[in-house]
Structures are given as C-alpha cells and as structure tokens.
Image 1 (cartoon, rainbow, N blue to C red):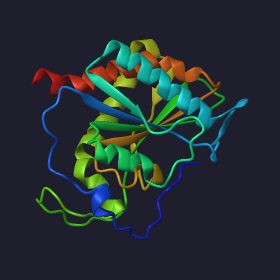
Image 2: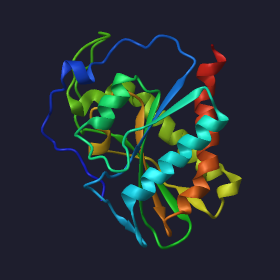
Image 3: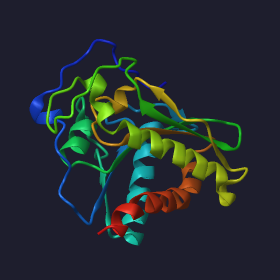
Length: 227
C-alpha cells in the first residue's frame, strides 16, 4: 500500500526546499528516478521477489537505455542497492538539481493480465495562497504547487500515450491519473509523479521500457528545440 503523508503541516527548511528562480538555460534534461524501498524496506512481494529489487532494476534499465539513446538526457537514480534512505532524500535531490522530472517507480503483484499502470500526482488536500516571489519558504504539503501544472500535464499525457500505444495493446493499460497525499512525492518543488505498475511476474516491467523511453524523448524534445 502506498504511503500517504501526515496531515499536519511541516515547514520546509530554506536551504533544502527553497523555491528558486528558474535554472540557467542548459542542454541537459535532468530526469530523476526514485525506485521504491531501500535496504530496510523491502516493499511488496511479486511472486518470489521484493518490490525494492524490482523497482531498482527497472530504474537502472531505464537509465541505461535512455542515456545510451539520448545523450542530452541525464538520469539520476536516488538510491544505491544497499542504501538506507533518509526522509525527503528524493525531494532534496530533485529540488537541489532542479530536475525537469522526477518519477517514483513502484510495483505490486497483479496476477491478471494485462499489466496495470496507475499514475499519481501529489495533493495535500489544502489550498494556500501563493506569491509571485522567485524565492520563498513553503510547507512540504504545498511544495508541489510550484510545478503542479507540469506534473498534471505529464501524467495525463503519459496515460494517453500508453493507452494509445499499439505495441502495448492487450499488454498494459493505464488508469485515469489521480492525486493523493503520497509521502513519496511530498516536498518536491519540481515536476513529479508516482508510477505504480501491477505485474504478474518480476520482469514484466520490461514491456514498458521502449514506450517509456519514447515518451520521455517526446517530453524532453520541446526544450531541446529551443536551444
């Protein structure tokens, strides 16, 4: 079960989650992949494997294929195999490097075919007023508002892409995206979403490698065309 955030507001430290002015123009699209689990948290079981291992393997395969085919995209994975992650580790990394996109990768056992993709953006359930300042402190529950439009656009576009992808017909379907107060997305000021895949075996995520690489290429393209 995905972890949801506590309802109590949490103040973000200025040095960690400050909302800064736009980054300088760059030729590199920064993608952060945040695989579920860590050394202490194995996650859910898929047949005879745990979620943390499957998600990490999935992240590394995506990184390998993306950077091999698309040198203008840099992929950063938030954790190493035997690492115990800290609270807000992924958020701190994505915010510090001003990532163009963060994808939190998760899997669970879905015995029935096809594979099922669920996409989530962050929602705190609260609505606070925002300012036009280029630099200010915001609560962790409101950090997502800085790039919420982009995050929402990404999940809707990806869901449509997957459901319209001919090679995935009968193999994978995407549910309508939802917004939840998910701990994995709290505190992230950059465009971010959680991708949860229901699979019937530990390697079924492979069917999404090529489609995801193609979609990410499409997302990164507009930025490159203006360089």
